[in-house]
Length: 226
Ligand SMILES: *Cc1c(COP(=O)(O)O)cnc(C)c1O
Image (cartoon, rainbow, N blue to C red; front, side, top):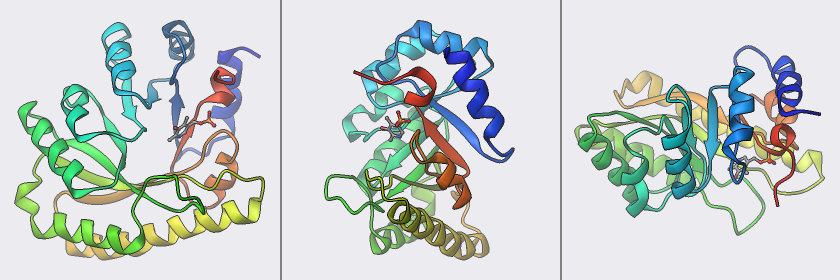
């Protein structure tokens, strides 16, 4: 099937409140344009250099999301245009994003990445680190005028075991609900939890049934990557 057909099939299966991020890493501009012509405007990339090049070359009404692991020293390269950074997992990175956003007179939306998988290799915060990071931002509010924390992101274990994946998605949703309750009533200007980014090609339907509001789908749209 073509990229357009894949995209239309996926889009028609998504509930209204779920945002589709088309993950275009390693794919050529022609593929992205095909999805663009079919109406897709939100794209996700994992590598800074690749994202910068694609942003320069492709239509400027594309909303670019950075979904990889961002190194602090590279934040300045995407700060002029990125619309959402999914994988923030340290205070240091948040401070750097804030600094670079300020230089560009922007407020950059960020998701905090939570470690939900049963694997050592994946990045992310545990519950206590998440709690501490959110409270730091709340406490030093005026130091973070150029970022806004809009939600959480997580990646499930790479496994066929649907029960395991469901448990991990349920866990992320429960953390989201808990922190949302707290920070909605705390009325902190730059913490406004509304997005749960979870679900990829293999598990996005399950993720949505567990409360995801944003799915990141690559291979089911563009085909497998090398
Ligand atoms: C590559 C990637 C995806 C998309 O994966 P697919 O299985 O191709 O849909 C989603 N999220 C992150 C963080 C990724 O790195």
